[in-house]
Image (cartoon, rainbow, N blue to C red):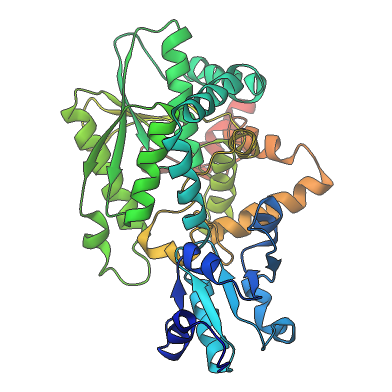
Length: 403
């Protein structure tokens, strides 16, 4: 240990403290190295000044690039993967520290500063609203309105619970509904509903801060869903999703709503179609609206049905907005994945679609249209209301008709 180290940092290292705050890192005036271990795309989008990039997946192949004579600070999205790396560097005798809560801590500090400046936060909200109607009118506003009309998603007298998870999709949906209420022809009411199923404190605060920044008057209710499904082994997602959907229906109904709106978009639809074929051995799609089976009189609608995910990202980045990417307690170790981290079926399908697009730019549209152009007379079998039908059912009768 360097005997000239400030006592403050010598005590951290000697006592084995690995996690430090952003302020503590900045207070360290020594010559140091900051390594950002997030993905290449995230690093190129933005990082801290003077940070160098070594992706966490490749980190141990680049150990020779990590200096042993300087303190090393590590930054990931949540502070979990970087903590693991810091521990292993410590084991090799390197003075390594993990920045607590990672990039989320950076975003939180930025949000706190923005909300503290009333004029800046007001201008940020106005910019986000203007961009929906002007800059992104064709890609967001027009497709939002088209989906509502094409699939008859909203009727006069509806009271809709716009369900906000805190991600980019649902927050954009909330802003689109606000614009629709201002300029639309339908006579309907809206409740902006946020369920907290057990988010960590940072994610929950991020949702509250974004709602305040964007001027969305949210109604919040809490549940214990994460705690309930915690003992469901390695795959609690199906149960968790069903319970969250049921809780949203139930609370929305208590608030006098007859519909809930979810933020699934065009890319969710085409990925679901391919996932069903490749992994489920079936042809099905994510419907633009559904009647609830367990809550009579309630309906689910998906107003972002025709909007591309890349356009949502462009709106987010254009307005310098930062939303939760994955608030699930069970995947927080990779909170940028949004359920699509490497190794997941949805991530594999996303990658496959990107590859196919390089050969045919219309591949996404063709996948989407495929479930609108189903020819029943060319199917071996199909299901209707849970009952299976086969081409053999009418095969001989059709032959007699042709005679």
